[in-house]
Length: 314
Image (tube, rainbow, N blue to C red; front, side, top):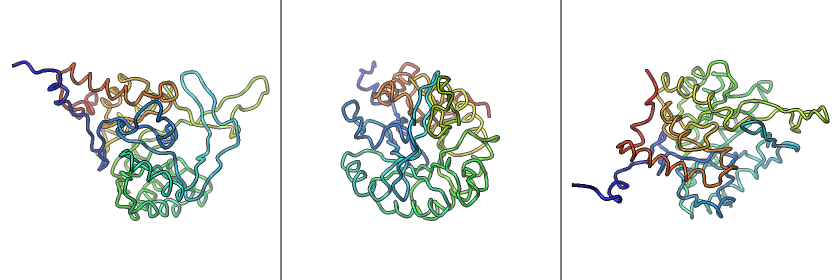
């Protein structure tokens, strides 16, 4: 008997369990690109997105870096925002209640400059309903270790993940930096620290120079490169980690359309995060979810999990 269109739609399952973070579809919006969701209310209903990873949050308010803080590059952009945010108390008292009322799946992104900062942030978030999980921004300088980034040293990665896990009952997902020699070693360290999932990848370190002034374009000199230019690097790293580490992966880096997103899923990601592409198309997260659903239907597949790691030989 032929099924009608509604029955076909009902048979498609896009839901994902990302290390304990339940998502209605495998599309999240990356931290720092979507604010707290309200900024895009005229374009998209945040409840239709698999998860909103809110702007990076620290214990105290931060003003961010000096401008200029963003510049466009070929096939991407550089940003040096510097974790500008109102601090954890404002997030908990003002933003989280509004997100909770809307029914948005919220992942909190936390950052700090010491192991104690991360542990305190995790403890501060504990017990607040409406937070589905924690994403750790470990591309931060450890001020007690001479400014070395947490995310570039396996020992520090393991320690910061373990410190956050000790203070939180929420799923914990470190966001791995690509600015390392061996991404698999970093991923294994995160797993040893108790990570529930991995977020891959953060931005690549880059810069731009204004030849008229003969000075760096960004006020901070260096910034994070994102957009289509980094997609091949992100895919390669996810492929490598998926073969070696048994944790679900949130994959991102230059995703601009459903085909890009499907490549990440086939490389080993269970879900994807959309960042720079949102600035081009504010509805991109919804468009990608719809495109994934259409691909499953066109290929007689019922569940997005059937595609996870499909291109990986392990």
